[in-house]
Image (cartoon, rainbow, N blue to C red):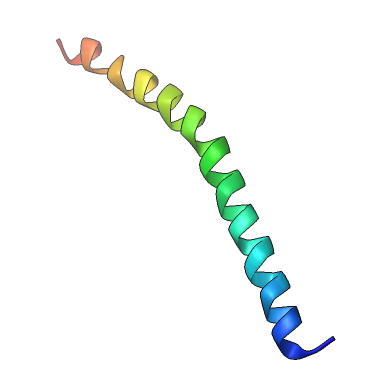
Length: 44
């Protein structure tokens, strides 16, 4: 195994991690948006 293989493995792992973060953050951000939309009612 050479350095290139190690770098390639790290790059693939990082890409998978980024995809997981985006997939997990997507639904969370949607819920956060709904939660943030509610407080303005208090301002009224």
